Length: 246
Image 1 (cartoon, helix red, strand yellow):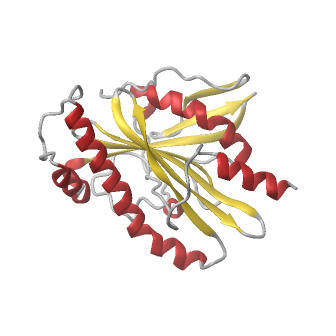
Image 2 (cartoon, one colour; image 1 turned 180 degrees about the vertical axis):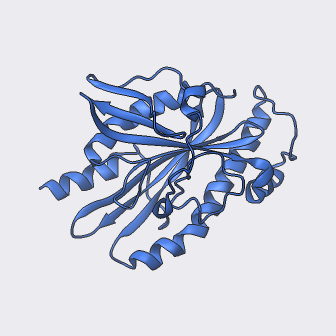
C-alpha cells in the first residue's frame, strides 16, 4: 500500500504535468560556477564546497511561507543551501546555483537563437523580451536533458523509468522563469527519485534552484517523499518572492 501511495505522490507532485521523454535534470554544485558543464550539473555528482562563502540565499531570500511548525532559513554551514526543518529536525534542503552567462557557451547560443544578443540590455517590462527569454530557457532545459539522458540510462538501464515534466512558466522574483522536473519510478517499488527545479536569467547569470527526493543526491534533497510533496507549493511561493534581480 505504501508503494502505491508513493507512486501517487510522485505523479501528482507537479500538477497537471504529463510525462515526456526519459531524462534527468541538473543539480548544481555549490558556489558560482565559472565553467558549468552538463556533467558537473548531474544530480549523481554533487560536490562539497572547499570554502564557505556568504550563502547566496541570504542575499535574495524574501518571504518564506511554510507549513505550520516548519521553519526555513539559509543553512549556516553552506553557501548555497536553504534549510527546511521542523522542531529542530532537518527535513530537507533547497540548493541554488549561479552560472555566469559569459562562461556558459550553450546558454549564450540559446539566447542568440531566441533573438537576445549577448550582453544586451534587459527589458523586464517588454513582453517581446520575456517571450524570447522563455524560448531561450526552454531550449536550455531541452539541451540539458538531451545531454544527460544517456548517462542516467547507462547507470540504471531499465530498472528505473525516468519521465520529465514539461517546463512550466513560473516567476522567480520579478523575473520570468521556468519550473521543471522529473520523476524516476521503479516498477516494483514505486517512486525512486523526484526532482523539482526552477531556472531564470537576469541578464548576467543563470539562477538554478533544485530540490529533490533522491537517494543519489548529496545536497538539495528531502529524505522523505511526503515532505517534498508538502513543501512543493511553498517553494513556488518562496521562489516568486525572491529578491531577483539583485
